[in-house]
Image (cartoon, rainbow, N blue to C red; front, side, top):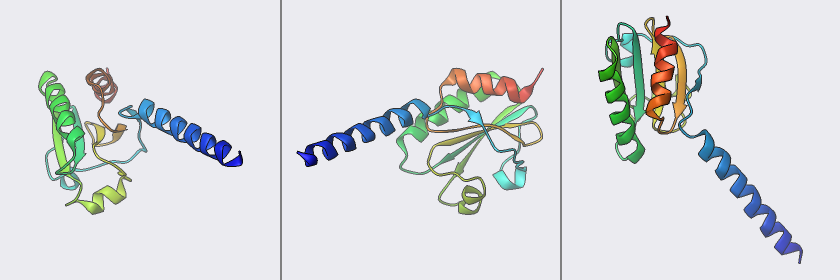
Length: 136
């Protein structure tokens, strides 16, 4: 009988962890206040903001994220989209504490991290984060 309670508790805990992770996946949260330069990114910063995406070759959500960020960057003048291969830039991955791909950083004009998301962000959330990065 004790084994059934352990099994039930394990299943309940696993389900709770899965639900929390699913709800947080792709949320654009405030990032640690770090500043990145064009040299760090290997590409130019946008005049108004920059969308940085960390990807890997076999990451399926990375392809969808690339489309979302490219669309948003094309909609807003002065916004650049920079994609970084996480496997080839492990130094930057460690410095920014990137634990999974895709990871998206929204940078302001000076390269400061305004928001970050792990997972596929929604287009509306990216636009809202850009509004914060660009400012009034």
